[in-house]
Image (cartoon, rainbow, N blue to C red):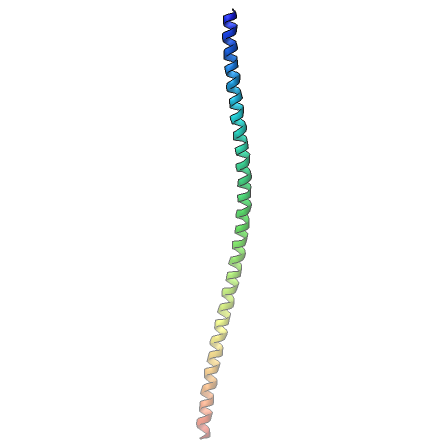
Length: 97
């Protein structure tokens, strides 16, 4: 009977050691999980900020493209007016001679 108790005591001790090891592994995994969740939340926030910055950058780019088109149109109009005035000046010089 004592032999049997001793055998079961050894088995119980081994199982308790296994249980302790499993608890340590579980604790380590929970810490890793917590760290990864925190890192994931930080990356999610960073992604949102970058997305917002990209949207703002796209908005400014479109605004600048619009301004460029407007300035090109104004330049073309000014250049045409310059040519027209040059032609009129030439015509006036020819008429005066």
